[in-house]
Image (tube, rainbow, N blue to C red; front, side, top):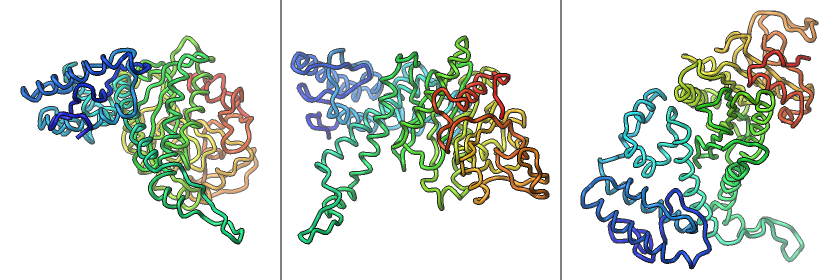
Length: 473
């Protein structure tokens, strides 16, 4: 039971920390003490009343929002999470988690959501934000508000657990003989989760930083469409609302992508949004960073294995189907999927999976292979597959060594000169693959999103459907 809670309810006593509820502002402490005590009393009475009538728990909690001027602390967030769990237990079968669709199609999820009253929707969002925030096919504004609750509570919990470990000890120590070795205190600190907690906070900081940049340099609001701390952590973050966007781009990063490194991937899609907006300000754009699968975390052996792509493909397809469902169908907007490095392999696995691939164009950058030998084998069709590969990017060749490409009968050429024939293996940067090979003016494996580069401009042209502005080698 949370400190200061009424036995059996999880509701705060007057004077106890106030559970955070959406809508809280910031404050300077003492002037709001009376407000806090009043809210605690009202929550206590409301929850007790709800228990007596066995209904409308979440609505009562949701409507009792903290007023503007009341500071929200980590302790309040932790109390809120605890209180919510208590209410979940109290409701029993009423508004139970089992009634939320699980493993259903985005269309089924949308049908379920549309069938709820507004009151029920608010209740589910309050009691089960993680489950609602993960539902493909539910409006982005709903997923965003739900996932922000999960983010706030997760951050408070992780920070609390890190603080409980105490200050990070030095990683190494020098003994009396002057020899440097590992510090047992640091090893113990790390074994208890120290580094993991720091990494998780780093990823959450990147999300918060993007929230804070809304409106700066014309950036649109951000929408948190997915978030969890499972495994290496996942985040799906959109610049602009994809439900209403004319042009949508979904970026799938590759090897080593995870929550901790989300800042770089979010930055890339921020630049794609700026490029798309600059190319056609008359059309709305949404660019999405999709770290929604478990990517390989090492070049060898993990990035040489195909199972990561095949396991991530259904998740990507569900997400794309969800976007298309909420948008209103395949003709409601233009969607481009951008795959970088091993992310392109995941895109390939998703595109060649049975069923419809809910995208109009595929762009790959530094691709080690997309598991097929010809662009025509991807669901978008040969004319809507685009490739970028820098001359000094070794990943396409490495992908051939790993067998991540595909095979076809044909002739392999380099600038028109044949050098292989027969049952050849191809990746998207090969002429024989048949993709639109776009000009690249950046270096290395990660420069394709350099600001003001031709590489970035070409992506913007595809995202906005301005194919005539694509520059070729």
